[in-house]
Image 1 (spheres, chains in turn brown, green):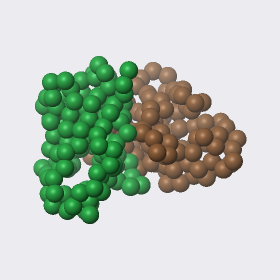
Image 2 (tube, rainbow over the protein chains, first blue to last red):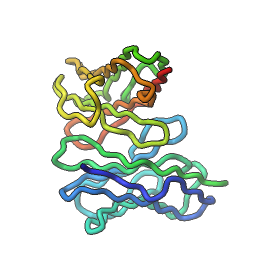
Image 3 (cartoon, chains in turn orange, green):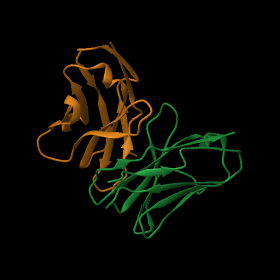
Length: 114
Length: 111
């Protein structure tokens, strides 16, 4: 069965620090990859997505992610975090021949200290 | 343009009861997926509906069932509720592509 792992359960950073959240998946075929964010009290929102092409994808709010096929990874990065980035971040994988079933990772809680 | 809407927002039920949750997809979307998100965990796929039929199902018991209507809205039914069914139930809609838009969820508490 497909699975998605996220390296950290809880990350605490100060404002202006750089962020990298790890995501690895187990699936040997073609996949579509996503990062979603869930701000406190709000619904899941799409940060960025990768379907094909340039493995470095840019999303909203200054986030980017890099797909490394050989490592089955899709890590999320931001050069300088803000207090407003405090949220739960979920990596999700959609195996390409499984229709639109998403497999989500357990999430990483990011706390940014002002 | 309304996004994905879900009702009710919160619900409290007693163990053994039945519950129905509702979802209206984003305008123009024809596919609805349901997820269960337990506290502190990522969403778990329950099932997906397309053209009023269940197209794909995750690892959930038959107590979980659903429907999709001609206007693409959907319902999730859970029978014989267990304490472990307490969670946030998320609905997501999409149109052909693999980008899903999520609703705010229904918080179900089983006592």
